[in-house]
Image (cartoon, rainbow, N blue to C red):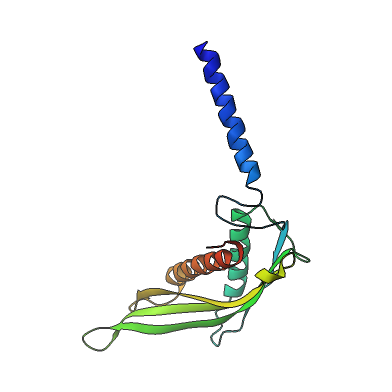
Length: 172
């Protein structure tokens, strides 16, 4: 009797959780609301910054594609996507941040900004054009090459892509 009651309780719980998940529809565990969209496209983000760092345009484009693929059930397409992301990298610069007692920079800051145009072909009221920027501070005794550059760009792109994702697919 107790065994049969336990199985019935577990089956009821499974059915309830399944119904709950199905009723959520287009929502995901990341809070993304893709509506009725099934596909997305990320057009190449051209690097139009005054200082051109080779490869970051491709790197940003791929990072945004990867984030959306990993956090939604949308399919990536090259054309006619339900959701379209495009834009350009508008800033890439290093500025000194803090000074030492002998008036030398103690830290430098790399800042990258992107201008993003987002089009929701199924719900044009959600379209926007917005600038996103973020920075990475590093020791002034280090040069922005190799591992330092990779860490800085990866950290900035992680934040920028998450900000673009939140702006376009969440109602936070």
